[in-house]
Length: 225
Image (cartoon, rainbow, N blue to C red; front, side, top):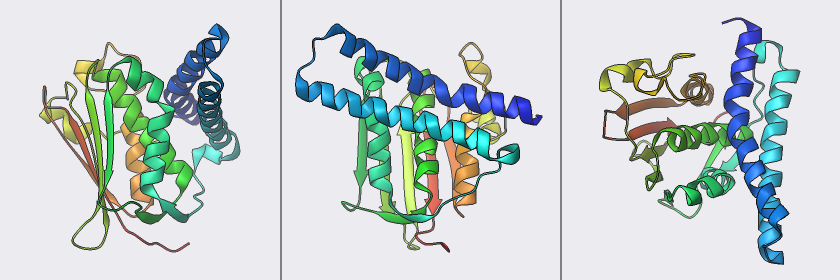
């Protein structure tokens, strides 16, 4: 895939959901039926999605061939996940999808690029919301593994994908045959894999038709800043 197609895929995959969320919240404000507190909440979510879009554009404009320069810092990974879940709350509420974020502690810190993990979980949530339909459930469990690393298990109860296709899920541009009718570029899980690998972690997927989609990520607590 050449650089132009790569950039087009990045933009296409990453801007669709935040733009839709901004439009949805904008429509709510335009209706004028929200009280002052709800208006402030909606504006906060709109600003969060605008910031996400701004970062995506910066990623495309500032990096040759989309090579990523990471900015590592100490990050509360639970806070990141909950932040992203709030960005997509309008979608999950309208589709009656329950999102549960559970940690073995109130705060779990890792050394990471906060923005890239926002991008990572945006991609995971987008995939779930695109393919799982209504009245579903997304569970994100974060805990300390026996070896001292951090284990993140992201799981939805959607329709899943054929087990035989799982080995291809991280390939750039790969799309499951069961989802070819849905919009998308097949880039989401590739982005997720790239971010986890660049943070020194490991990732694997477990899925089958009718059994949902589970992503297991193991990350080191610390890495050189």
